[in-house]
Length: 186
Image (cartoon, rainbow, N blue to C red; front, side, top):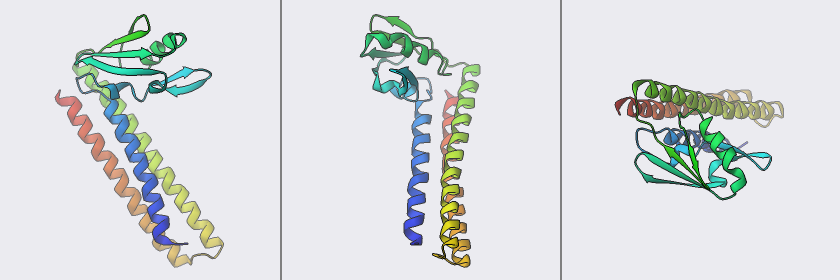
């Protein structure tokens, strides 16, 4: 087992979890309409759960409004329902094949809700990173049982995997702290 290749692979996978988390945080609004706000929304379409961006085009015509142009008219109700039930506190209204999503003003209660959503995303990111660590540790155990690595190598690599895990979780928590600060300052 090549230790460098193994650790690089784990780092790549953990970075992927942090990148995904970063995109989810970008979707949390901080007062302005952003097309990223609707990115994490999943729509029940054609018998499967699909990202909103695969069934519609999202634009921000002004700072307080999002416009969702649905490609297939039969999907309008499903998209509207997904936006309403997303937990983002949005109330869409349909106009033909376009759904208008007014962005409500940020009050203190709304800010606290967004901080809770941010915390939920943070915990999901931690779990994803820990799952990558668990997979790596399982691979190490298998390699030791197969006598590909020694017990000492296993211990040394395990420590490096834990350091990498701690580093990535810290990175995710820093992103979350910055987002929470942005939300509360608006």
